[in-house]
Amino acid sequence: MGTNPEVDFLHKMASRMASADPLQEVLSQIVDFAASVVSCDSCFLYALEDGDLILRASKNAHPDVIDRLKLRLGQGITGWVAEHRQPVAVALNASQDPRFQLFKDLPEDKFEAFLSVPVMCRGRVVGVINLQNRDPHEYTEREIKLISTIGFLVGAEIEMARLESENSHLSEKLETRKLVERAKGILQRELRITEEEAYLTIQRQSRQRRKSMKEVAEATPNVTVRYGCGLEDFTQDGEGVTVQACTEAICLPPAELVAGE
Image (cartoon, rainbow, N blue to C red; front, side):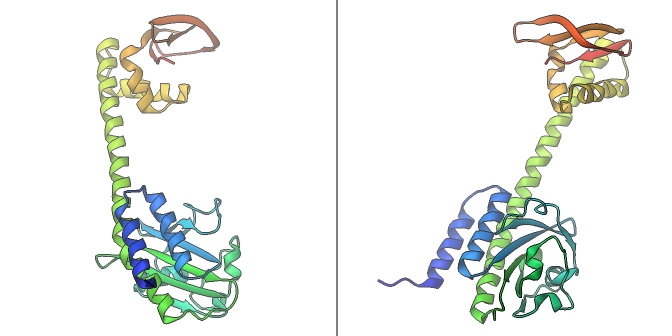
């Protein structure tokens, strides 16, 4: 029985959408898939975040600009597509299009053909997919529809993955805040200091130890309190607190937290 390209296309898309992958993996998969259904020399995927289009994935390696290159709505062909929510296909001399934005650092700026389509979710733009060809290329109606379909189908997936990423980040922040609040309470009780002083103590230890506030806060229940300035350092080795010579003199306030290493 012969294969139907459109059915294969939809099956692959459904399989990608059914997987619960991290956001960056989802974006990379979308780029790979778009480049596989329409022959091209470059494929970019921009995600709309906080009003800016940020380059999140690329067919070609661009570590210097991935996650750094930003466009405003309306800026360049990409920004125009996001703003007007409709595709743009340029078959020849794409850089001469009045909407084109030159970045200089990207070799794709010199490519001839340019196809840009919006990625949508419930009527909102959540990103843009760009395909480029080195040589002139007349994008067919079928190619434009295929990439547009990808944009419609993966929009919800991108939005869901983005929200999951945001929720994970928020959970991490809440967990850190909870640990810091607990650590502040311990320091206030043990050192008889104010809440602000307790927070500044944790913050200072975070900088000195080159550890995150969360790491310092987690260690607080197992720390030794040192008063004054001295040349001894306290470390936690799992068996208890040990004392060893400091490698350098550190001038500390009258009461200071020394986190377990």
